[in-house]
Image (tube, rainbow, N blue to C red):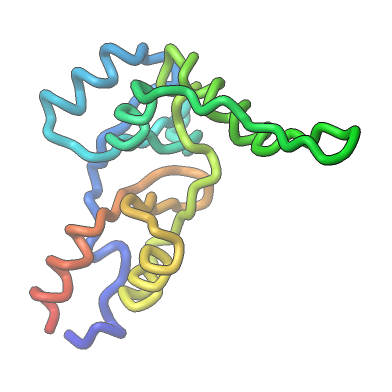
Length: 154
């Protein structure tokens, strides 16, 4: 099968790891360890996507907080990086999957071709790409799935 005829539905994990937004951080980390996963979809009761939590998110939650700097110019003090500081602080204080999840998530539909999936992942440094049918999560594609498809469908 040529790559142009390989679609998201062909390579996705149709039973992706998911959790509800109220799952606490300790239980979330335990699932990553027990299930040997690198990403988990946070969904509501109707399986609509809320966000994605990755192993990087869990690790980043443990790092030191970067205090914003300020530049003094004449009589003015110009704060630098305040919005990033606020984002970091919010994520460091997260106690549930919903609070930790990245909500600006790239997604694809089941009929998106492999070449487009590879482009989205490469152009946006995305490692986990949820597959949605409307608003409902029907699968997940990880970088490993794309590599496996390149070998399988050559």
